[in-house]
Length: 355
Image (cartoon, rainbow, N blue to C red):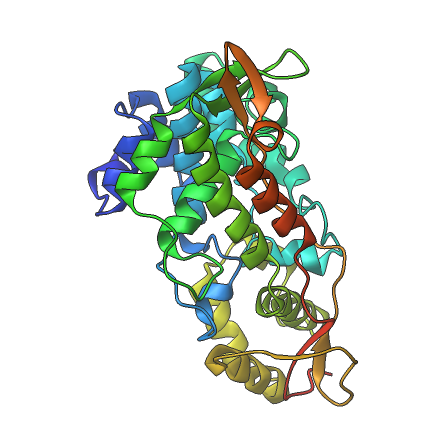
């Protein structure tokens, strides 16, 4: 038991201990269940990790889920809220939000969350632990009900906080230098506390405007990186590849939740559809995307407008009151406005035809 936490490597172990100096014993048992361990084979970067267009360290959906749980525990010391944070991505399929693109859910990217309850209830190991702890499924299967775990943009919650930390640390979704190091993350994290927002609800916020500005700067840079053309292209391409594999009966919907990404990639590369396998190889070896303001015929060409814009305008405590960073900091306001105004060229393409 407790194998996951016993085998952590640097810098993940250091990072987790920044998020919580205590790893609660109950959490270890849930993390070691097969349903949670499955997430260790799914990248946080929605499959972009596998193309040469990106330079990033491996960071799994399991690590993200554990990170969210540790943040929730740090701020609440509440077992149910912590488990809700841990389970929030338990229904994530291979290539993560790519399947939301496959389902046409570009903007909210929540189309797979309805399976969360099902995945928890189908895990005999998790159900056994919940029964032992006297916890009902409905208390942990929807992290949206706990504002410290999740809330509406542009507020700050544990989920949004964790991926801003880890994506900036590991180079997720980007080709640029990493946006901060562990020392900077620890400095920002220690400046956080629970504040009361405009709706009289508890929300994670900052003690000092300087730390809030630093966080907003990184979050806003990541916001633009998340919707770069190569990112939108890659997610739509992987969605179309998976759909073609399904339509040709080369995979089932269940396979999306059964296989690791490496296993799924092997199925794609060795599938009987030679054109599909060739297109996938071209994408994996591409080092840049082609862009255009007009649709390019005869190529695999992607145009997506309403994609999810991930930006954060956190609370800051000023004279005993909590206000949004953009209301008191010109720098934060400009960083957020730049992120919201960010646009790419209309089309992205590579030189192949997936049809």
